[in-house]
Length: 385
Image 1 (cartoon, rainbow, N blue to C red):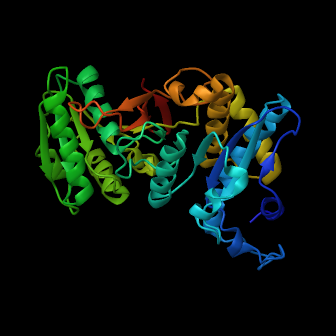
Image 2 (image 1 turned 90 degrees about the vertical axis):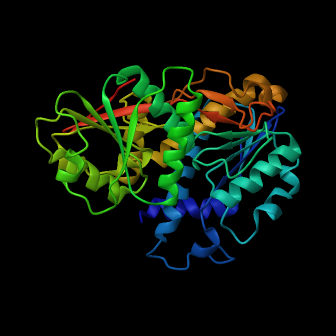
């Protein structure tokens, strides 16, 4: 672990508040897992001077993105006060939320797991302030909470986005969903079947084939059509299954024209192993667009750490920039403006209300519905839409 990370963690122990003392400031609380109590003792001395635990790194990278954004806002003279809280410290979330300095917080932003997300969403509802969940792609069973915002699009929304993509570009092609047994795989199948009943467009003809985990190119080829384009959906979030499916499809006969469409976890695949296969996967965040801001942040980060910034760094940066600016623009009315466009940093967010029970018309939460479709062929990645 770089020495700069150690000094950064020490600074976090000392203070969590930033920005000026004169004008009326808007308060934001940010939660991320730093595990400070596992790294330092009560006097701030590092427990192991040569080692920062690997599990601290993701939360720290997220924090670094937050800090870069705060530095930028500070240069603009933004009247905000931000509190960074360690969601994996000795104090529970309940104890931290009860701190007097958080009494008038106007927004909560978090890099959180499922139990933390559920608790923060409930607290946001109680306080009637927005809670922006930036990393967890799950609604954690929350309903009837108009203050809860999911940025990392849920699995159901991914499936619905893929279905609409197929309707737009591949309605005349042969579509096969390959899957293996599993609870999450059953959920993906269910989402496809349910959306086919509720779609406003013409329903697709999708053949669902269970191939298990130990299949061959010949088994897959038996379900392909040599006379037209084949679109194969990888109906699993399991990366091992995804890698095997793509590899076996790439090894089927070249006489089959084929594209494989995968889930958001497919961005971690080793695409070099199937360079002759066109792969498309969905993601709500895409940080390889080569924008001026992205390149500048990458250069500054690399100068400091001798390493490229991670997606969590960019996630932390753009979450604070996007929603701090929204808070400053709308002030006390921020909860009524969560769907407002503008202040785009990297991601084209499309935050929409979600009504699980359309008959009841009860707003359950807000969700980012914008998906990037990333096409990978060989070593080249491009945005399809």
